[in-house]
Length: 269
Length: 269
Image (tube, rainbow over the protein chains, first blue to last red):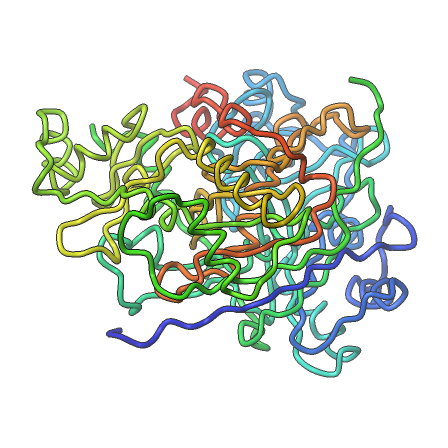
């Protein structure tokens, strides 16, 4: 409230890709320990104040979130949507189970709402998995980010941040950017209410999506999966590394508050 | 088509904020020369292969895109929308003039389509301008990015990239990330068609929005306007700096092709 001065975020960042020794193809006992071990082997050091970004798919595979569609039974809703969308009923069934709300479909893709926003196919990915298998999004992502962070802090000898990153598209824009599915130890959404120039900037500029920005920066040095670079280390974020556990309540905006949703669904009439 | 190998993007990036000597409050003769001069004075060097990111507002003010609402006459459409949205008719008039299509309104904000995607208030900004004045988005942004690049290349003694960056929100997410309003000399949208894992990834992963990722990384070290850091230099993008003039055709996706648009506006019925 009022006129507290605007914070400087960072003056210089360093973003380094972390190559791993082998692709992750099945569950590991403890994803945090696995990441810490791969990071140590990579030669890219993690120091206090750094943020580790890891791909959501890498985390999900490590959690054993690989499903075979033939083991899935599609219910009536999924069958009806699949017929209309031209998709597989079992795939749609998983997409519905992984989401809080079905929003529609387009171009064979089922669009759903999840805690991390609007997702194509509930972020379930068919690529880089054996025939018929799919990779679901990580389970309990914020809690998982916490657990990864605790493991990494032991090695880094101080507070670090963790971001679990996926890809997303902006409306009416071509191409993917990074999005933070979850984060820990990082001020992922910076509240700038109270900064001087608030008039007319309510929705556009009141909050800054720091974790999404970090994920997007990291994506530039990470591979989509084929390059064996499922992690990155971002250094220089200073006080934004806050040693705090966060939750999706910080990043989630409901459809009724979402600018796009309201405008596109016709707030006029 | 086929199996051309996936390209490595970058392994390490450096992102540096560029502080300027004074805020820009009025038109400058040549925005490219002005930026080159401020960059030289900042002590942050620009070398061949680097990308300069500059805020769209800084560019727009330098172009003299500051308008006083009392000089604007609102037509009937703008008056009707303003009444319904609870906004100023003159402001809405400018937002309509600056857009290709009116999409709706929400929370007092007019939502429009522009070449750079869906925009709140057509990216017209009321903040940090004298009473009643507003800042319109840059004019001819891709051409302007070209002109800035040519000026910078003279000083950098080789090819560099330029990104003109604004802020944008992702659907159902809190906070702003960077978006590239325009770019030059940078492969802003990376076409990954032909890479091995294409099945099921058509819309999500076929293209990577490199320029948007660069803008988002830069936003972490740039101020929204009060911090006097309207620029950043991103080093390490390698072959993505391509010495080519680009256009909004690369980044633009029409509403009928847009996943969100189709899903939210009800592709089912």
